[in-house]
Every structure is written in C-alpha cells, then in structure tokens.
Length: 421
Image (cartoon, rainbow, N blue to C red; front, side):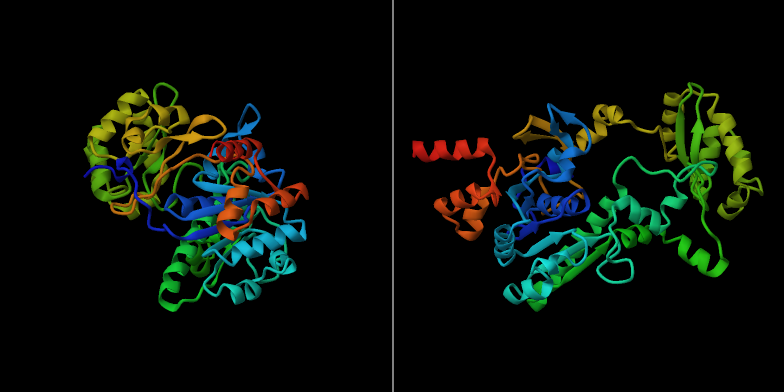
C-alpha cells in the first residue's frame, strides 16, 4: 500500500471545523497544531509581541525555527487581550467557532467575561478546551504550572534518569506535548459527542494529570506492594533484556528482547543458544530476577563488535535493536524519507523549512502540512473580515488604537492586490 502522506491531501477529517487558539507556549499550540494538521481552520491569537514560543529554541536571523513548526497550518491574528476591545473581538470569534483552546491560569477566562457559562449561552455547541497545570478544580488549581512542573508532581520526573544522579528531564517539553495530545483527543471526542447531542462541553486537561497517566504500571504496584519506583537509567524494570549495551567503537546499541521467542533469537545471534534454556533466563519472569547477570553477559558480547555490524546482525536475526539516532541520522535515514516524516514546507519567514510530518497516518482522511508557521499578525485583517465581517475602516481604527496588529508585509501585499484590482 502506498503511503497516504505521499498522496495529494484532501480536506482532512476536521475540515469545516473552526478552532480559536488562545493558548500560548507549547501545550495549547500543539493541541491546535494537531487539529490544524487534520483539516480544521485554526486561528491562533497572539499578543502584539508574539507568543513566547517565538523566544524558544534555535533562531535564524532572529526568527524562531520552533514557531515555524508548532504554528504550522494556522492563520495568525495579533490582538491585545489586555484591552477590552481586544477581548470583545475574541468573544465575537468564540461565538462563531467550534472549538476554543486556552491555557491561561484557571479563573482568567471568567475574569475576562469568557467563562463557559457565558460563551455557551451564545454558542451552545462550543467545545472549550482548557489546559492548565493542575486542572480547573482542586486545591492546586490556581497555582501556576509549566509542563516540567506538572511532570515533577506527576512522579514521572522521579523515575527519569540514572539512579546515582538527580532526576533528569527530556530535552523537549514532554509533558506539554502529552497534554496537547490529550487535549486534541478530548476535543475530537467532544465534537463526536456534539454530533449526537448538539451540545458542546468543557475539556479539562491538566499537565500534572496527563503526565501522571503515563505512570500507569507504578500505581497498582504502590497500592498493593508499597513499591516506590525509582530511576533505572536506560533499563526498563520488569522487561529483560531491555537496555543499552556498549559496542567496540565506543558507541551503544539498545536491545529489547523480553519475549521468550525474541530472546531465543538473540541467544542464537550471540552464538549462545544455551542461554535460552538456562534456568536463570529461559522464561521472562526468571530473566527479571536475574537481570544484572544477563545484562553483563550481553554487554560482554556487544562490546566486541562495532556498532554498525552489531546492529545489522541483530536486525537480520529479527531482534529489535538500534543505535540511538541523532537529528543528523534522522535527516539521512531512508525510512524517514519514505514515510514522509520530513516535510519541506513553504514558509513566510524562511522561504522553505523542514518540519516533522503528519502522525498518525490515516488511509482515507490523511492530514497534511500546508505551510509553516507564519509571521506575527500575518492574517489579522483577513480573519477578522472573514469571521466577523469587520470592514476596512473599522480595521484601520482598531489598528491605530493598538488593539490589533497586522504584519506589514501582508498588509502591503493586500494593499497591492486592491490597487491592481
């Protein structure tokens, strides 16, 4: 079967849905990005100075490469929600959208006259996606919280890293991405429910809870055994062998062979078929109880072979194994290319820029990357005209008052089109 990402994309399963994204930083924008990838018309509202994501990650000529990806497929509006006129425009847009995504501190939307009770009276089908550190209720609800704070509270941070060092973190905003994914899933479920009931609802996605949901194996273990999981480095407790092993050329290969049949294949590849019948290692439960001894035997074998030879040997033996990819490895990898996971997207900032492709692959209603993230306020006037019917003179007045901001290049281009017409 051909890769659907290589096919000219259709409208997407969320085509026709209007999404207003008020969220900033990562979790809210990632939720909006997922909805946009699959066809929703996502309008992102940024303050005049731009979303804080524009200050994160690597820059090129002072422009954010991160924003080029996480703001992709969206129309970008710049308005000042610190003004009543700006909030009034947001309320008007909320009355016309299907989904509103926000990640302000709980209580902020209510303070601005945009609580769900107010918005749903005007738009009863509205799905309000609320992302926060600790949820909309409970004793911690008013605390500020970034993803890494939620990750620490969830217990996930406690189990990340090596046992002889302080808790580590992944070098991406992991919990923000987890929460954005749950938020988009919740929005999709709410839209599905609305198709039956006609009513919208609130999706309450807490950073701490979304991260905690990934602690699933450790919850009943504490309840029944009092076991507090700790850091285990590159190993996965209860799954043996499943670890990082050294190679002859000072590199590493990760091998995962916890199933009995896979373990037997590993033993054959090692030239140690006897290990698969050794009473210490023959069955999965026995291997778990003798993990240190088995890891030492495997490491003694892997360290004699260079990484490339070891990886090829294990793949040929149908044993799940790989080196640890760098971004340079990914860009050179034929599988990433064949699967369309590196997309060269048209960009208002960079001409073209490579950003991640669409996941998951859908055979009939594939998502698509249409363009990279745009400039601050690139679509302000066009969106307000399309969504609210705001006329040119009114837009001019709002811009003069500092309520809205239009990207200069986009304004000049639009002005040129009007003159030529």
